[in-house]
Image (cartoon, rainbow, N blue to C red; front, side, top):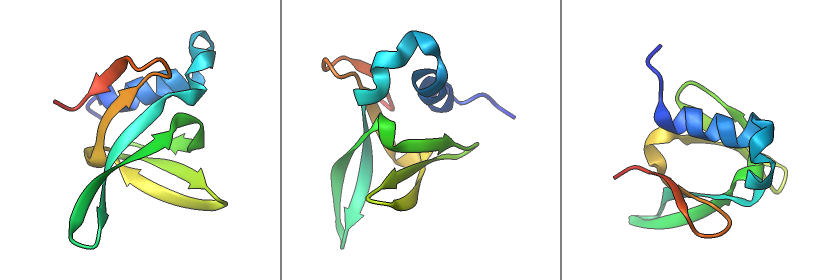
Length: 86
């Protein structure tokens, strides 16, 4: 399987003990509401698993799948961009 930079970054932030403070980092995704596209922010602590092509988040007791192609960037809790799709 080809390595994915976004997958590796999220896994590192979630599971590497050196990044314990990363639980408040934000993942920005493209989200559709009707025919309008908006940017939605997800706190990384809501990620429950990382799959080959997506992340699984749990918010308000409900699990949702977010494909990697919808992720725009990851921003640290102090505002630094850690990963960007650009």
